[in-house]
Length: 442
Image 1: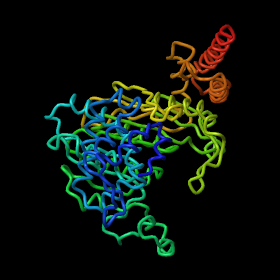
Image 2: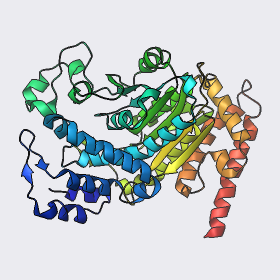
Image 3: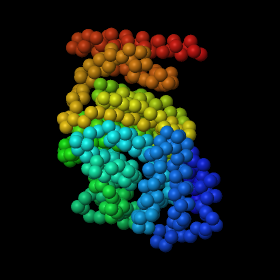
Image 4: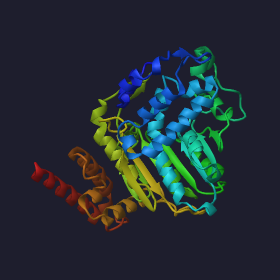
């Protein structure tokens, strides 16, 4: 079995490779799905070892064990063609998705333990789910009497009640795929969702989170009908999808938990549009976080990834500050050694059937007032600028430029908040203080 791809995940694969044939037993290809079939104990040991490798095994040993047991159970009981889908690329997708899901699963377990059973069973909302690994693992791990449903949301799912979509990866006929209308195209096949028995209800929902109407649909179709608490999960949400996940949590009734692992930075088009986002009481400019570059045919076309670390740090910090919750945490879990996309944003809120107080309206005047209030309410220089202490001086200057551009017009506007001048001065003083501190250190 070729396990070289695991090197990119920071895993030690030598032991797994040498243990592929245990006690001299010869691998053979299983009929029907072309996968090397190993003795169950050999596969179980291998999968457990790669899932527990590195910081994941050190910080979440019990969750790693549970995830490994579930995945090995899938291999034992699923039909060959459905297991082949979940274990494609020599289980590379399974290992990657499972390792990314483990911190989220640990949070959900802790959050469920803190909820009262009388509040009702929980609903798991897995945004941009892909094949649904996170939701499916939770469906197996969580007590089934405490779970109402696991809802997998992705724009690539087929439409329910519509014609069966062709999956490019499974049909193998690009001409057939190209003949479909754009509305009916999909990259996902849901047979592993609806043709397998799951301990709890698992369902799919086709939605594009970038559309303004999607939040209203989620509110009316998922959050309001839910019989109990709702947990919103988003692993590897690209660009503004992370903003949409936070907006859903901030505005949604019954939402008691959020796990967000942001991924790619927003595109430069938002800078051209002079976009300024407001999440809760926090506001930030597109110029602080956007970056050019994109994947073309799975090849990155853009700046060297390592140079984007400071921008991603600013992106994650701004998202974190925009979450409205009773408690929240910004954790760093380095799944791949040296990789900068290591942020997990986790938040908890007490259960309430009523929606939280509405966030600041999106009109410019109210956003400006919220920004003034945000600056004046902060105490330390880094809090005034809304940046972490570890951010680079370039990132601090970028944030300072965005804030001063937003606050400067308010000083000459007679209808604006008179405290805007104080906020502008506070931002300038904070920048000067941090710069002086950095110079003293050097």
